[in-house]
Amino acid sequence: MSLSTMARYDDSRIEPLDGSAIVIGGSMAGLCAAQVLKDAFEDVVLIERDTLSDEPTIRDGAPQTSQPHALLEAGRATLEDLFPEFSADVLNAGGLELNMTRDIAWYDRGGVVAEAATPLSALYASRPLFEHIARQRVRNEPNIHVRDGCHFITYTHDPSADRITGVRFRDEQGSETTIEATLTVDASGRASKTPAWLAEHGYPKPAVDRVNIDVTYGTVCVSRPPDVQRGVLIAPEPDRPRGAAMLPIEGDRWQILLQGLHGERVPTEKERFIEWATQLPIDEIPAQLRTQQWLTEIRRYPFPASVRHNYHELRDFPAGLVVTGDAVASFNPIYGQGMSVAALDALALHHALSAGVSGIGPRVFDQIAPVVHEAWRTAVTNDFIFEETTGPQPFATDLLNKYTTRLVTKAHDDGQLTEAFLRVFRLEQPATSLLSPRILWRTLRPS
Image 1 (tube, rainbow, N blue to C red):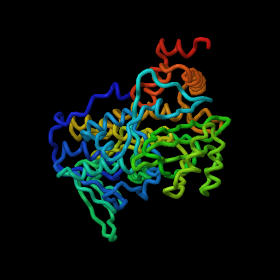
Image 2: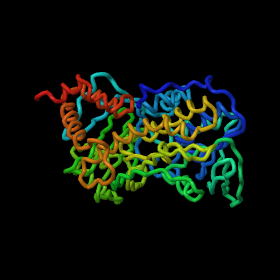
Image 3: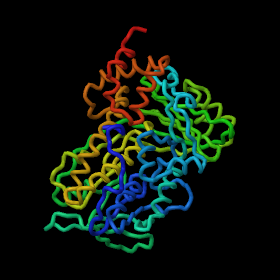
Image 4: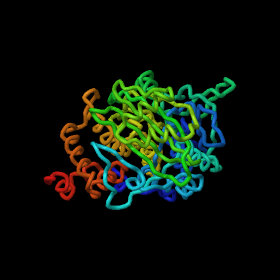
């Protein structure tokens, strides 16, 4: 499933429901979930473990917020529905809207792809800015109450009704509080406690797919001349398990990320960081690292594996509970899918609410499964271009990678292939669209 096949957000379709709702986690997944829950419940409480700033700042509990971010079209369109004028707010705060292949040098499979036949844009800003704008909107909703500095402890449970009845959490002073709710949404990310809780209380745990990629990222912010908006993306390749991104963000800055896979470790010392970048096939990144002012220290972030919990396979699941975002599936961050999948998951929750709370968990999981599948297949299949990658391979992975390699290589000189590839990457179209007769012919015809 892709953005093109999903129904849009429409708050008029939701009838008010009895009781209240709780969201665990204040990342983009939690913020989007709270925004759709407000349409159905009189009160929504969002619990976040970090102490939240009134400014766009990196959260300690989410180290990936220091990395460069682009908002893919599926996420941008959905966030625009959930938070009207979201894109305008990003741009007014200094974010940029750039053509993904004219303004960004996209290096993949040995060359830079041609400019897409149709202009394809994306929003570029820091992750803290994207979250800040969504969080301000949520905080302005009169029936959403954000409680930060609170650590989720466990769910409260009524075994006789087979239902989650709320949560227990600890605040910054160490006091424990229990809140009851009709519906609880776990948007707590990769550290979700739900699988362990299910096992402890006699429910089956979801089967887990784990694809080990052993990635480390190092990110630094440097100054950017105000009139320069160019960016660079360099995909890692089997004979060069190093990649990079240099993306313009608000505040006349570039965020520069270096990526190493399967034993390649990005250094955290400045001169070695620059030297590491000189071994990349485009020299703009080390040039800017040498000439521009460094505004931050290097932040290193390990990402050992992409992980997917197959909640859609469960049918014995407690009532009153839904899991969403990275707590369901988290992908190699280099593909930039996280915010978009979180927004699409919230859209699925919105549509599920139209049928009430009864059976909502499995109903949501069934709806988000195709979204997760598309993002998972795109990211994981490409990660298997490396022999060292281990884990369950999607169907026909080797064949698809050979085909995609040929397609992207041809896209160095073919803007129509660039466009087709990017529409899948942006989660606008399913991966099967790359097998349409027109794209097949352009890919497989002799050079």
